[in-house]
Image (cartoon, rainbow, N blue to C red; front, side):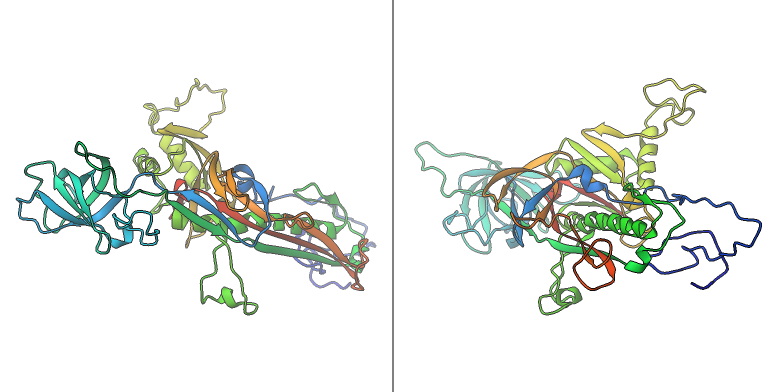
Length: 480
């Protein structure tokens, strides 16, 4: 081996097993009477470099034996129709028609469901509240439904309980919802029924691979730097360090792929890359919450008024009692500052908390959570801080993700029954003969392998998995 650059001792690992000035000593002049002092053990200047931790804390893993994972989530128990329009109005009508936007009607429902109500949840005899949607308006009315159109345009004919109903503006839109019903004595019962509404979601697993290769000659090379990795691997053989780091990197990808994955859109390059079949992609957590969940944008909520808006949105969703917010460093500071400001002495002292501060006590300036209608716990998410991953991003930056704690009951179509599942969980491909949760195997002719004539040891990694985000309407994504 020749001297390729001036000798240096700032050793850095390389992605490949090649001789570089940054990872091998190049000065072998042993005639020099003054030998340098060397630290034979590698210094861990970046600490624990892995970012995988999020799904381990909030999720679970369970097997699946299909290319497609499907589940059903329950719909709302009650229905509310918005942006409805009133029929002609002169101020003296006691009966009026209300048109419901077609996008809010379920045209795919079977004809046997409710042939008399146009597949809306409103039926003759029910009583409804009508509210003006105009900003600043306080106008509302109560009415009973006298007729429902069975085809588009979907209209509801109502008779007002008030002798003089509110004078709604001609261009205003209405919100209506059912609050009960009323029938005369001896009258027939309710006509039509409202079937339970389910939403069917699906996701497909993706195959994740990685590999590490080292030649047999390099495996026989003597080493002089003692290495240690996050998973406890130690020794003087440099190729072991690279193998350990490849394994750690792959384990990180098992999580980050579940967080970041997106489905391949029709006509996209990914959908046709690699042949006619192409890549399907998968629905990662960020994609699902961004499309089916709640999103906060425009900076972090830095005051209680901002979290009040979050809480009011949660009231309209599943109202999960306990939630964990996984945040980057700035969002963590913003929450700490917001909570500290609630103390009456916060501006002139440091007395917040249930303790008396003195000069011999280490002052705790951070908070782990708070309660305001719901319980919110705060946890740092290393993935959002790591500068080699999402840390420091400008475009597409994510500051935090709020995840409901606990589990939910869903109908699992594979099992054919209701099952309790964490809101976030990973499904990996497995059967009685093949487990693809985390596969690793060695090929080649070095390192104990005897599978080919290749003078090297190749370590292969593979997993096939997908993440299921149940009840995305209970999640909150905090974006810039």
